[in-house]
Length: 377
Image (cartoon, rainbow, N blue to C red; front, side, top):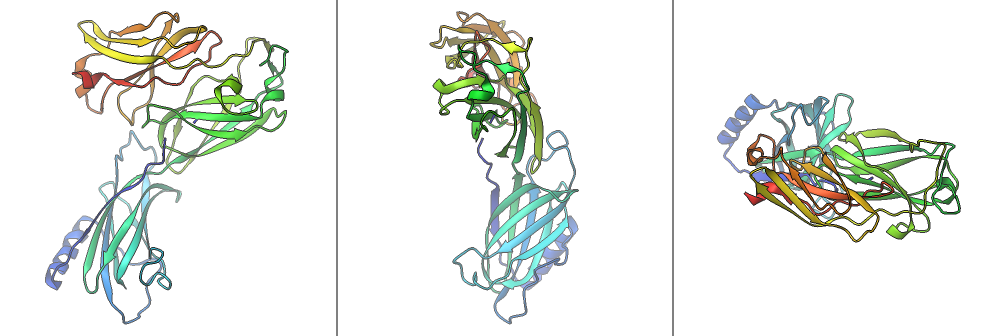
């Protein structure tokens, strides 16, 4: 199952000062963050124009609740952008320093003037990059440039170990099994920073009973994933089987591995060909004295048997299923526990509701466009 790779933000500020002021600045920064000597990549003594560079790196949103392993090392690498002056011969420069939650600073002295690309990585105790940021800074002769980088969580990987087992998942009226017909698939996932699922396709080996699917660049956080199998193409009309949604946590720079297999009440599941219904339309919300009333339009699907109501309280909060509404004709639900005061609760960036349709075969649709109840106040 399978939202866009977050791009690191960067604020670069160049300062020019007299030598006395530079000394005072260095003392001030040293008092806040230790300036460490070079570890690798010291530039050669060329006698040419050189300058100094101070780089401070912070990790955005770093809390014990959002990140569960310690960050220990800041690694900063300088390279000349392709095509810039001196890019053909300038070596890559690298510094490492202990990282602290308040931020850390590294110093490059006597480096060649010109435009430099800055790449910052924050490593965990095992040396795995978990946060990252990048940008460019201009170094001038006998001047000090200062750069501040806000590093963001790096994406991770999702490894899905699929085992269809020896049971036959019948996916045609003739009794053909899923393992015999499937040739393509999708891992669909709903990242925490998105209201709509993304997907990655994969090839299913012919008549295979098991496979390992690896999905790269999955955004950090708590996500929901789903597996969909196809025959002859990955459009809706070729769907053979779609699983339920399952939760999993993605750690920055790490691989999260899950095992998936279908569950049955008997050795054989006898079904006709079914497809997920389209999502509900025109989702709306209204505050009442009894709570928040949600209404929507039923999808054009005669086999719609009910709906799931979902909510997120912000882009970095986990998905929560609030209710299962029985009956395809039922197009409203009252959330009695909702209150306007929740919009101002610490950590809440909104109350985002969306609804999915569920068919008689148990297949779930895509999410409806969300509605933010807090925006109605």
